[in-house]
Length: 207
Length: 145
Image (cartoon, each protein chain N blue to C red):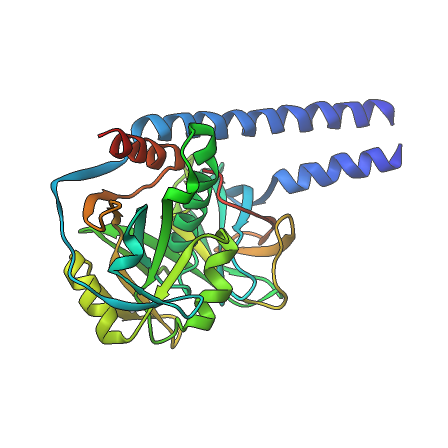
């Protein structure tokens, strides 16, 4: 009996180590091969005023970009894969700021809904702070959302799901970085990695 | 001693599950669910599927009593847009590995019957074409990156 257990233990450890190694090597490969794509806008681009509402029911407009760096991206809460992945990545990034001696009070993360029909203030209130209490969820009327998105060059379109009566929303995957003067300073493309987002931020802070 | 055996077996089953039937042999490992707010209508599930047999393996569905519905979906970035589409089956050639992962192929797990917490495990049954189904444990965790 003891021999059987030992054999199982050895086999289990070997299997575990093998899988651990595979994960490790995959992660190294992916972090080396995939670098963040982005463009720094020189000069920064001004944005038209807009009127949206945040998950605390407060008005959210251009003034909310002032005096801090803002990472702004678009999504919807019924999206199970890409949107929560991006929010988790931003949480890692945001929580790591102190170790790079960056004051997190000068950085905000803003999730703008491209599904204002389903994403009410209440829905966002239950969704966005889960990822970080300081993150801001933003929604608004369909017209205001569309105007803001269009000004940033963001496209989104409702797509009925083939396998249910629900719909998904195809949307631009870019992250927009606004400077503390409220101007668009950089546009980033996925995939996003926390460490790479921090290095973009450091680059912008030192520019 | 029996307890130790049980624990080792539990680890074994958690790490990898496989099915053999005819020339189809599939091994599934690293199953997980991306943690999401408790009010989420749907969450995403991921796993690594290895076809260790000599024939083509096809995953034609996934079931679980924990969810009202499970669909196989693919996220794709195309022309700067993120798109998500339903997929009718996953095909894995002999010797190939398919990794379901964020931003790619995933399971859309709709309406969990109770909110899922970090560290929870959920069993799902992966239905294969022409082989025995495989029961896989998915653990709820936040994004590895």
